[in-house]
Structure formats: C-alpha cells, structure tokens
Length: 302
Image 1 (cartoon, rainbow, N blue to C red):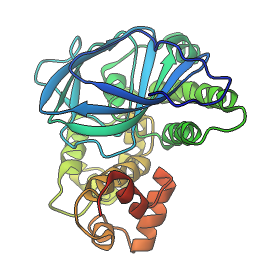
Image 2: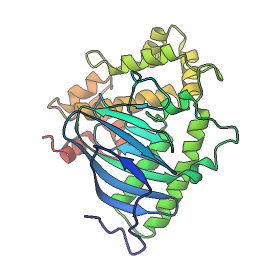
Image 3: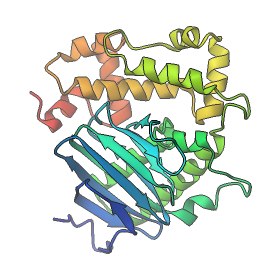
Image 4: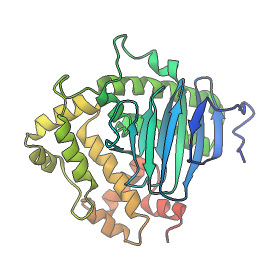
C-alpha cells in the first residue's frame, strides 16, 4: 500500500529497472521531476545470486537497517568472476552497468532514490570516464554529505509537510551535484597519488575483523606502511572522501549490526572504541537521526 504524501504527489511507474530474485516491497514513494524516491524493504529469504541492471538512472540506496556484512557485488562486464567488493550502507550504481549481487539472505529497509541520468551527468566534466576505481567507489559511498542528503529525504518522506515535493526536488538537485563531485574526485592509484589497490584490500580486510577493536587511522597507516598524512591524502584521492568519514560511517554500520544482538549499549560503545556510552549515542544520533535505544526498538530488539 502506498502512503499519500500530499495533494501534489503523482503516482507514476518507476524508471525502467531490472531486478531478478530480489523482491522489493515499496512502503512509501514520491515521484519528482528528476527522481523517483521510495522507502522500501528488500526481502531475501535465503542465500542468493541476483543480477541488477537499469538504463537512464543512478540508483542511490541507503540502508536504514543493518546491511549484512557478507553482501557483495561486482560489475560483471568489467571485473573477473572472482572479484567481488563489499557493499556499504550507501551505494550509488551508475547507469548501463551490469551488477552481479550476492547475499546470504535476510531483510533490510532502505531509502532508494532513482535519479535521472542527465541530472547527474550534466555536472560531470566532459572528459569523465568510468574507471575501475570509480566503479569500485560506487559500491561503498563514504561521503557524509551524500549520506546526510539521503537522510533528509528519508525524514521528509516519513513526515511530509507543506511543499514536500518542492523541498525533495531541491534536495535531489543537491544530491546529483554531490554525486558528480564524488565520482569525479575518485581516482585510480596511478592518478593524483591515489591509494594502491593492495593497500585498499588491506584496509577492507581489516574492517571486516570483528574479533578485535575497531581500527584507528594510525593503525591503518601502520598496516599500509605509510604515514597517517600519506594515507589520508591517498585515500581522499582514491575514494573522494576523507578516511575519517569512512571510518566514522563504517563504525556506525558496525554499531547497527551489534544493536541487533543482545549486547548492552554500553558494551557496544566500548567494543567500537567510543570513550563513553553518551559519546556513542551522540555519534549514532548525528549519523542516523535516532538513538541506539530508539533504533533497537524500531527493529524489534528488546
């Protein structure tokens, strides 16, 4: 059932999309001049392999509940069959690229914004090329600016008010510009001093470890055998965002997964390296718009 978002809303068919073996249950949606925005639940009952492809849109998705840590994807027309990359909470799949997605199953709620291709491409430089690094960066967006715009859209869809459609269209315009900036900034290791691929893999493997405390920038620099300054500069060149933003976002995603367990909020804060429960609560609210306790209540963990 589709919620009404005011008299100005028009119910239209979403842009052309092909999604196989991944049922999408739309809860609320809003059609805008440059985007189709919806709050939806993705239902995967078991381990599966699915294929995703769409023309004419950028598919931007923010997980509002924890994404499974083993969700991975690869661009099947560009990468070899064994190369997969972990999917972050925030992704932005570009048009005309075929994705193979693998998941161990489960359900998660997402805000999905299907942005018209021309709304983003108009802000890209004339010589823009979809390099391997840019494609990889699309599977785990670490930009806090893009994330905050998606959260603002989520807030407006949950609690629509006067001129909801006009406000959301303005937010999508900002989102399109920030996406263009993000992808333009992402570069390969041999461009603008980017981070070497072997160092990127070291960082990704370290981030998957759950049996030891959450890493710091200093630890990652030692792991990569460079200074923290070199790491910060190379990471920004490769990913289009700071490593501090990347770590902050990754830590909140780890917190979401831990909040699905019976661990106390105090213990979760300590395991993730927060100085206190109150600092954890403040960081979680700043990133998600809700407190850890409210988040737990929303997902049904007592």
